[in-house]
Amino acid sequence: MAKASRNFVCQSCGAAYPRWSGRCEACGEWNTIVEEAGATGGIGAGPAKAGGRSKGRRIELVEMSGETADPPRHITGMAEFDRVTGGGLVPGSAVLIGGDPGIGKSTLLLQAMAALAARPGEASGGAVVYISGEEAIAQVRMRARRLGLGEAPVQLGAETNLKDILGTLESGTPPRAVVIDSIQTMWTEALDSAPGTVTQVRASAQELVRFAKRHGTAVILVGHVTKEGQIAGPRVVEHMVDAVIYFEGERGHQFRILRAVKNRFGPANEIGVFEMGEKGLAEVPNPSALFLGERDGETSGSAVFAGIEGTRPVLVEIQALVAKSALGTPRRAVVGWDGGRLSMVLAVLEARCGLTLAGQDVYLNVAGGLRINEPAADLAVAAALISSVTGQPLPSDCVIFGEISLSGAVRPVSQMEARLKEAEKLGFSKAILPAMAARSRPSGGLAFTEISDLQGLIAHLATRS
Image (cartoon, rainbow, N blue to C red):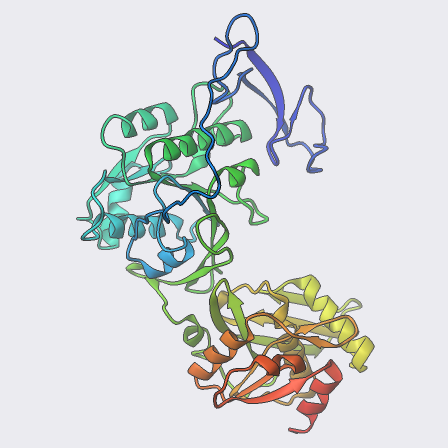
């Protein structure tokens, strides 16, 4: 038996130290270093043989040029869920899903597992298992009945001891898919630390990933998030798993966004859109129409941005409000976009275009609860700000996209053809886009306005007044 040792581990980033200190040198957090007990070999290190070092067994090496078939998929039948995972769950893969408390992670996975278990023609194999470490079986059944899934052929379990869970899963035919809700509640007897600590989360995730690879089971781990929105626990867990997915949404909106930030078997940054209702989460096959459904085209400060989320073009409304500030330091409030990016656009408008915004409060909102991460939204944000300052509404049938440089020039963005096709499909007839972008524009009924810099945008909008 390995001799027990005591380490001091940062509960924020997982860095280990031989002695306690008030501040973690790795992440800079204060008072996060806690003393934990563990084995010298660690989880999965294997027993050391007497006499020191031993020769390991020889592994098989193969040529890279060999042929390998595409991995099979467990298709759940929920199109938005399957889209984000890259076409379905890959056997032997490990997926980490995180999200705010109450956002609907358990509801989403219960619906997905029920759809997978009931899917006709699914390849023969084991059962679909849902292990809850936070709720009793009766509570999970109550939720399933409320969602209309009371008769779904999903096997339920309520346990936090990892040894008992793995022993049960390995006792019969390996299941096709297993949900662990959540990884922060799991604990292993090999470590003395409490559940939820960095050591326990890392060790439990490692054992579950090893189980997935050894038995060909798709394992889905539910993770809690910190107040900054990152998955709680050591960062190494995100490196262990094959896919990292975030379930996002604003509490005041019924829309939920499933976003992949890492996927070894599909595109990253892919999104799936759901709408929360009385019967759980409903898929939204056309999110552009949903985000624009309640738009008022006669209001100043509103612009339609043609964005790309993963492989999907999405049209969203960007709303801006510029008002005189009564404070010494004007407010800058942003919802759904990067606040630093807004500050840059405001600085360029003031320095390159002479638009005075220093004494104005600026509020920016992406309607529908969607969060935009790409710089292609710069031009739409600038157009909404100019519209709010001048009081002149933008055309209701016009989409805008383009990246703004610090010189005030408008630069082309990627996948312009897909953006324009989505706009035309939804009935838009005009587009404001970078000047060079028109070279690759598709043939269609859209009227294009080429903008080379922000001064050209202001001049174009002024001609409409």
